Length: 262
Image (tube, rainbow, N blue to C red; front, side, top):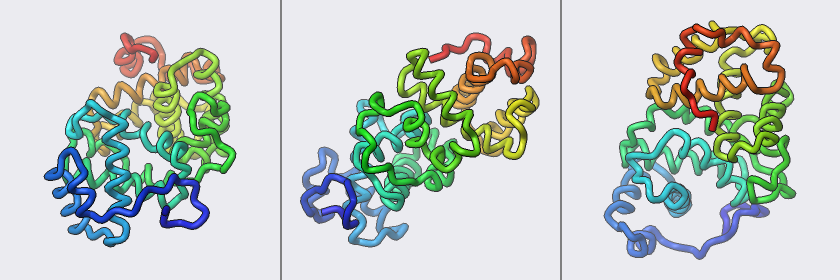
């Protein structure tokens, strides 16, 4: 059974670490993962749950190899997994930790250093019991509230819900919707305290510079963030009040010139 009474997470048969090694399609890989858990150290009674969280991530991104996963695959996995499994706050943090250990300590993923793991862990929030498990069935507002940390910020940043509504109305894919809301949220947190109508080109450029120099994100990840901000400022809700943030000819606008909107 699930380790928490009252959790909606689907129970799985009790299993020992040895059973998990034997049943895995790649026993040596799971042996190494269990060694990572031992070194950190993760309590013995939690290790099988770490294995199950990591296995769920691997299944979600197949056929991509762990060393080749993208930032988008990582960041969009958690809200979906949380909805499907009905995770509590601590279970959400455990899922993030399980994937982080697998990607950073074991697979040495190329993009793992670009992920703000603390941001994802602080995002933990159990979904309401009435939430559907299929992303497209969520309302626009629920879609935002199911996003990492957005539930805690949606009142402070109503723009996030408006952005999700606009993306949904224009029939953007769920993955694009989640990615754009994620990056818009990080941008608003970065510029915290500044009125949305006052956001300008310099804010966008400082945010992109922060990602490049302090977070060491790749050019492709910077472009994902920029695409989200281009939509926010040029086509999103209230875009007219922020039109100057990406003026034609600016460095940010030039970089976004050929971007696919999703």
